[in-house]
Amino acid sequence: KWALRFSCAELETMPNFRLQIPNAHFHKHWHDSAAHKGRIRQWHNQAARKHRRREARLAKAQAVFPRPVAGMLRPVVHCQTIRYNAKKRAGKGFTLDELKEAGINKREARGVGISVDFRRKNRTEQSLRENVDRLKQYKANLIVFPKKSNRSKPKATDSSKGEQSKAEQYIGDVMPIVKAAPKIVPYKITDADKKAKVFFTLRMERSNAKLVGKREVAAKKKAAAEAEAAKTKV
Image (cartoon, rainbow, N blue to C red; front, side):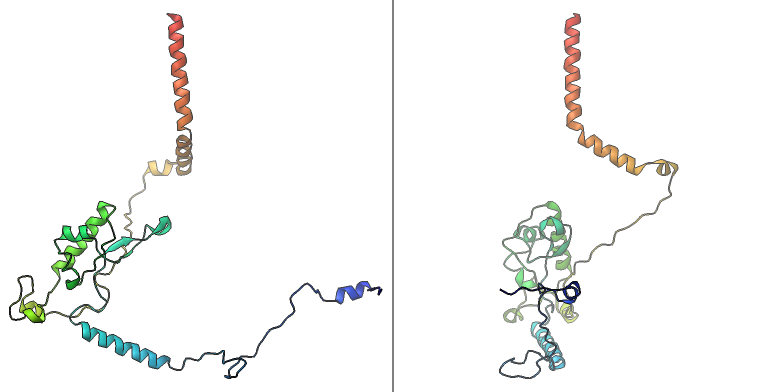
């Protein structure tokens, strides 16, 4: 058996063997070898890809003319979960009830640039009215071109030739959802506002809400005791 003896000075200078052994690699493998397969990916085609995306956007805009470039009109919906349901965003499509209230045929809606979602339902009257107003505003500014087969005999719902000549292709989201800025109305601070104790009022209201049940039970016991006392006196 071997006996290992170390002095205090040797123990202080010795490394801690419980730590991870350093094995850092500071050499980047730029070469495409069989062992490393070229781990550094380069991006020399960035400018060419940018030009290609721009050309694709222009080609798409020309193909869908005179329809908007960004696509169809989307409804205003609330985000999911209790954490985000106060925020609004663009939804997938309008419900059948919203289209019916706005006077738009559900089969012709997509043909005039309105998205339809057959699965979504209206849970509140407020969201229904908001999206119906959105549809009516869109319908008022809509310019409908006749189909190729009906150009000689346009329908009554098609726009006039004068309106068609003034039409311009819309770039960007159709009727984007804009967050309304909160309005702060300034007013003169009165003496009653200066004397009011906000923290004290909040604590009292919290206490009152907490003690509602106990006070009701105490009031019932007091009323029962008074009734018993009145009977004994009689």
